[in-house]
Amino acid sequence: MSQYELCLESANFIRSIVDTTDAVGLVLGSGLGNLAEEIENPVVIRYQDIPNFPVTTVPGHAGELVCGYINNVKVLCMKGRFHFYEGHSMQTVAMPVRVMKLLGCKCVILTNAAGGCNPSFHPGTLMVIDDFINFMGDNPLYGENEDRFGPRFPDMTKAMDQKLRELTLRSAKELNIDVQSGVYMSFRGPNFETPAEIRFAQRIGADAVGMSTVPEILVARHCGLPVLGISCITNMAAGITGEELTHEEVQETADRVNKDFRNLLKAVISSI
Image 1 (cartoon, rainbow, N blue to C red):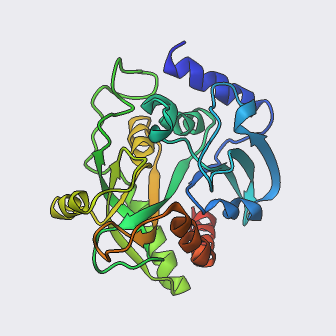
Image 2: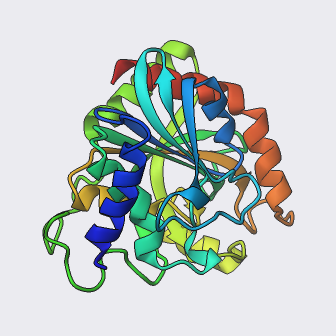
């Protein structure tokens, strides 16, 4: 089957269980999945039950699709994502965003845990993604174009939705939450980056680094789905502090800033 047909099969299965028309799509990254616990009247669908969805293998990624309401706004929430480094194809990694498009979602909010390479950042900083650098060595739009999703050569000049970014910064100010803006650079993973790679990332303009999100931005832009990205800076990237990095540290910092993160997301969702 084509990518469109695979996504349509997944979407039709989800649609048979719950109505997602005009929902806000959410993808929750490492350690950030407990926002889903605040969804009212939740309908939970396990990834393993959805046709063509793989099972997540990374700690902090529950592997559930949760549909319900946050402050009376309908949401379709991915509790965890698929990663390129798990061995999935780029098309599979980005597939849920295309499924959200077919399900009638009006926008998608992507979140992740990231390493900070901007020296003005610190663990716990929240960063609104202004732009991105794809350093993963692959692209979900590679291969024959699926015209039913979008054009062969989608423009990325304004990949991130300006209105959603402004709404997020305004909401953060109202909540007195310190939020920065910056460029997110995605690496292939699964190893954390080397100090030399971080120096390279800094020199080409990256403020934060990670192993996800960019494939989802690319397909969201390709299919015309407005997209917002928020990174939780869970650690300073390799070589900046001299300390070794662990996934446990990522999850611990995500847990620590979770209240601010949840409050910000709820405020943004309520205003969309």
